[in-house]
Amino acid sequence: MTDYSKVSIPKSLTEGQRQTQTEMLQVPPKSNKLFIGIPKEETSMENRVALVPASVATLVSHGHRVIVETGAGEKSNYSDHKFSEIGAEIAYSKEEVYKASVILKVAPPTVEELDYFHSDQMLISPLQLPLISEEYINKLKKKRVIALAMEYIQDESGIFPIVRIMSEMAGNTALITAAELLSKKNGGRGVLLGGISGVPPAKVVILGAGVVAEFAARVAIGLGAEIRVFDNNVYKLMRLQQVLHRQLNTSTLNPIQLEKELLTAEVVIGAIHSTTGRAPVIVSEDMVMKMKQGSVIVDISIDQGGCFETSEVTTHKNPTFVKHGVIHYCVPNIASKVPRTASIAVSNILVSILLRAGASGNIERLMQHDMGLRHGVYIYKGTLTNQYLSERFGIKYTDLDLLITSNLG
Image (cartoon, rainbow, N blue to C red; front, top):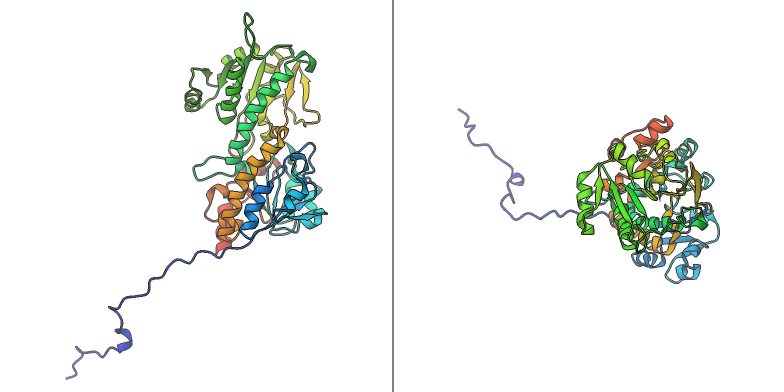
């Protein structure tokens, strides 16, 4: 009888089973060097530059290549010499700049500038919804670029860093601008925003209780103005009072209460931000018609379409218009009024993203695990990925997660 209890097992299958095994460590992705282009802004009265020399120096020290179009930093008081001496290349034609794989802009490219783009290029710029057309979207799709709207990029905590820093500046600038527009010389009511002894101060109504409201309120309080703040998020209203260390007159966006305050306001600041698309219209044209003659509206939400029904995009060259006797200031790049400060602020955020992208291999690879960066993408290699733009222009869109997953496969 054959004994099947003993089966011969080759030594190759048993040797080394109890021996110490080599530990397999995760290999970090190979760091690639980015090629970054900074074109000169062509948009009317855009004075900022996407990267300042100090940030360029940081990128160059990490081995990245930066090319800057001649004159790109002049309006922010940064000369070509300042850029070149820290390692940037100076380009004397747009074609040369747009050879870069990553294009950074502080204003959306013009339709004419889109001709310079090429396949698989990365564009990081604001979207500025009022300026975007169906032609613009379709042309950008045909170029098969990856386009990120910087105002929709989020950080790890869910905050929009570009919006946050620009909102701080916009809040400060909005009140100073409104104070100027209230003067008789500028067609206003001839009212001093803060008032004086024996004369009541002007009333400022702020729509939204976010960062713009916080910094606008700080200036208004410093000048001695009377403040009313509206927001449907009660926690934001509570936070605003906490950070300002004072009890403010606040309210939810109740139409009856809002109209009552608008009738007696000298200044109304629109600061409603949407996380995905157009800002909601809070103030109707009928409400604007009932406001005081010579009062001032500053619509900071205009880069997302505006929160006043009467708002229309203006420029720094022609910043205001009068409708129903009310002065409207609707400049989308309000921070461009102080371009040097604004350029440094934007540059600080962008350089951090670029350094992380370099460490990951490139920006597209960083997007695969950075949900905040992915949130800013609205076109991905010929496909629209933003639902709001899809509904607005009737263009088919595809969820970005599906596109990235299919590429990984």
